[in-house]
Each structure stands twice: as structure tokens, then as C-alpha cells.
Length: 316
Image 1 (spheres, rainbow, N blue to C red):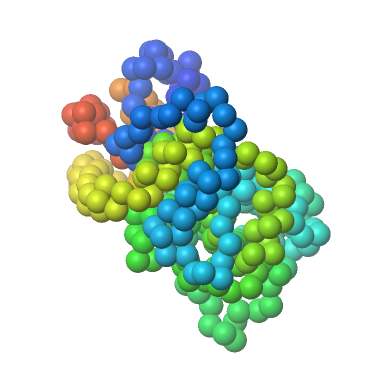
Image 2 (cartoon, rainbow, N blue to C red):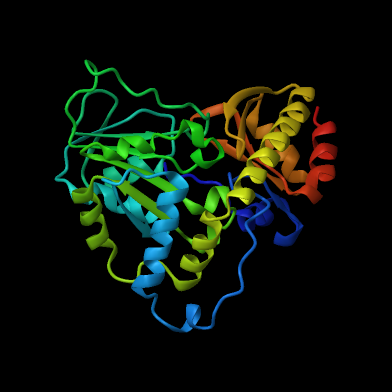
């Protein structure tokens, strides 16, 4: 099922209030985004040029410490890459162990692939996993059966760079996906990256077509990826805020299942009841079709904590 976070307009239609009354905790997007730079006018009026794109790629290489042998392309969001990845090989068997981010299985199914949990032609892993934050344990040599391609989705890994598997992009048949919108909090900019096997990256690049990434996205991300101080301070703040949210939820009777410092997953007695209670306070959360107990919350902005903690204090 293609269920996602967001949809605050639909929540307002169901539970009342105007869209602006709501706090959206249903996604894993940093609520304190990277500050937008001042744009040159031609960011909006000219087609993005190769020099600007090269600066973006170089900034990404330095930030993620990408191996020299790996190729990298930028795209209008990691979702655009996920939608195109199944087309670079003939349909076969793809290993996707759930529960995990559902767009991978949906995209492969749309392209005629068979989703399996054992040996396959292609393997897709989400690292850290969404929604429970599990880290993928790379297989031992004896268990790492021959694959045409391994896709490692690191959309949420920038909060824990020490866990990144970016070194694997030097291996043939490996692609790592990165999302700019999550950690930097600019999901509306629509920017993602694919990094890895040059032959596979070239095939993806052809499918994206020219000028896939906008001028404002290139300018913003180039500056952000060079701003190591902002990244370090953001990781520290997210860690503190995730701990504060855990403490508030535990005090109300929930238990922590896992997550990252951009989203937290909780076990509750009744996730629907919790979601409805929070919605009565105009706070939107995330439930999952495969669990009656799991509730996922993103982090609130600094000005929203009072509303969050007041709403949680009244849950019965």
C-alpha cells in the first residue's frame, strides 16, 4: 500500500480546523530547515548550467566522502530515483524485507518485478530503516549471494554519518540513495542523489533527462552541503529533541520501538485512539496499515513543544 505521512489538508477536513492550525508530526522532516540563501535572478530564469551542477556534485562528494570510483547524479527528489530504478534491469525477483518504506516495493511491482524476502536478482534495503530505524547488517561473504544490483536507501542516514555505507558505492552493482529534504528540512525543494556503480548511474541519468534539478535547488544544496557547522549543530539539536519526545511519550504509557532522531516509533495500546486524541489537538501523526499499535511521530519545531506536551498529558 502506498501510504505516506503528510496530508494535513485531509486531516483538517476530517477532524476540523484550518490547515494552518495543525502541527504536522506525520513526516520525518527536520522542523528547523537550512536557511535559504539569496538567489541570483538567473537561478529562476535560466536553465541550470553545467558549472553550477558540477559545484553541487563536488560539494556532495566532499560531504559524504564518496569514493573516487563511484559516480553521482542529482535528481528531483529521492522518490524520482526510486521510481526509475526498476527500469534499468529486466523484471525479475527483488528482495525487500518489510516493514519498510513502501515506495520501493510499489515501484518494483509497477515494473513487473516479483517482491520476495529471500534470494533475488536485486536487493533493496533502507538504512536506517523507516519506520523502526534498524540498521542493515551487511552480509558475510558466504551469504552475500550474487546480485545484479544492491540499492541502499540512506534517506535518513545524515543524522548518523558514522553508520553510512557510502564506501560500498565502490563496489560493482551498488547504488546508495540520499535525500536532501529530510535532514536539511527542505522537502519542497525536491532534491535527491544516487551514488554508485558508474554504469548504473549513467542509466539512471539518461532516464532523468536534461536539467532534472532546478537552479534554486542546486544553489541551496551546494551551500548547505558545504556548511559542516550547521550539520553538526543540527545533529546535536535533533538528538536532544528526540530524547525529549521519548520522555514525554513514555510518561504517557507508550514504549519506544526505534526510529532515528528525525522520527520516533512508539508502541501504544491502540494507535488509532492515540492518533485521534492528538488530532483533536490539531496534531497529525502517522499510523501504519500493518500495525494496530505502532505510532510514528516526527519532531516538533521549538515553538510547538507546549502544545505537544499539553496534548500528551491529557491522553487517557
